[in-house]
Amino acid sequence: MDIENISKIEHFSAFVDLSLKEFCQKFSFVLELPQMTFSTEDESEYAEVNFNGIDYHISKPYKIGSLHEWDNNVIKDHNFGIILSIDKTNTDFNNTKLEAVANLISTSFNTDLLYYRTWFSTGFSTEKVVIFTPNKK
Image 1 (cartoon, helix red, strand yellow):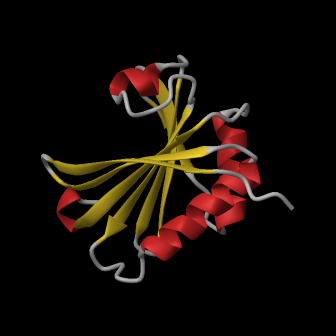
Image 2 (tube, helix red, strand yellow; image 1 turned 60 degrees about the vertical axis):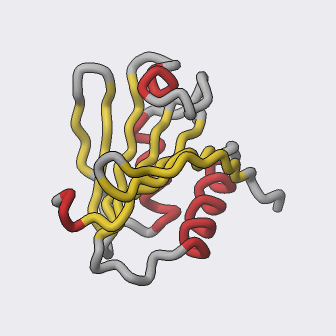
């Protein structure tokens, strides 16, 4: 997704004791997404898929604590970064949908999900400290 076409980017993190592939298979199933593509960088492995005007990007650094080093708003032991880049054409994505997605992820993985930042444009983002906790069934 071209940065010029993005209206905002939502940032989440969590600790989940799964491999990236296992996490992404479940993530895709829960959110009814197409299959993700996988790749690696120097410090992390990641997967992504673009679907219905949202680019879903999941990263798992090789070393616990890296997400915190890159952004100290992330809890130190969190090992998964989840980024939703919302295309400007996706006018349906609002706070209600964001909360529904976050609650679904938290509950499906039975973990606290930290919502820690919204990026709007270069040099302009808003820090958050919202923790979504799993719904008890």
